[in-house]
Image (cartoon, rainbow, N blue to C red; front, side):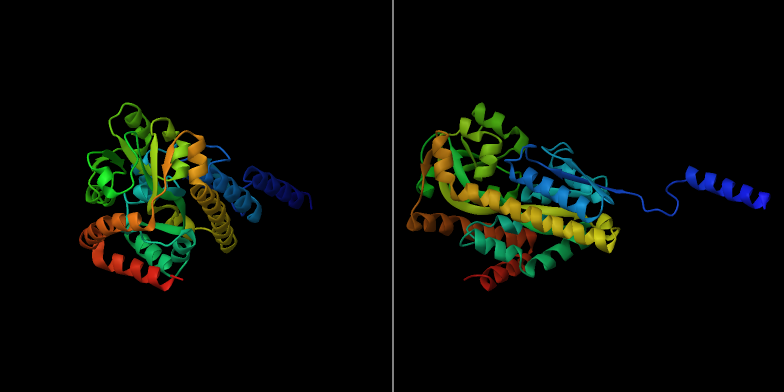
Length: 337
């Protein structure tokens, strides 16, 4: 009996020395976004809600580590990390996603939607699965949802813009994307591709006269300090994609995967509401900050649409693929009320 006790004691010592044997190890989910780490920023508020839900729903089998404010690197670094698996999840704007998946550029075609709710119906429709399946196949990255990056408007330091004619002679910053370069050129201004991180300095030093962004980004980077005028034309419903490395996603258990999906849904809802509330209160918010706000009439908006949408759509059909454009426009019509 003594030898049996000795064997049991020795076995217990071995098991204590190997505490992870037979036990599931805690997974870490590295989650990056580009907005400041403040609760008034939609991306960060959404990230905190995601973290709370996932860790609780998985009983902490997943630990979420948030990298805000571009801590994981610029657009290219972040999306490259996501593909390679050194980063697990990123909430990235369409310009960043385009670094690894060019078809996202179709979402930059101007004047697509009637309102926020129409855009959300498209992004929550079966179109998203088709889009995501193609992105997984070509990049190894899954897009789980689209939230708002703000309805994009033109700002500048020179003069009010009521009609496209007013844009002539202005040098406008755009994302490093041919879609936005084509859009601005079609409206008579001169586009200048400048990375987001360099934009405030470019405006302050008058490298460009203006830019185009949603209210959320104008506030996040304090662009109102350098821009006197804003025209609420709403030319593009810009997006933030909730993206995840597909290998990481497939490596989750059923419970963990459900928690991540539900956490993404909660984060998306918070993100959309915070951003759209700012969009809908744009005039009041920006006027208080000293900007001169121009609201254009439906007839003036039609002039912008007539000039901008056809050339950008044609560019997308040629450079991205007519099938991607047709698929999006089919979803837009199917969800129109």
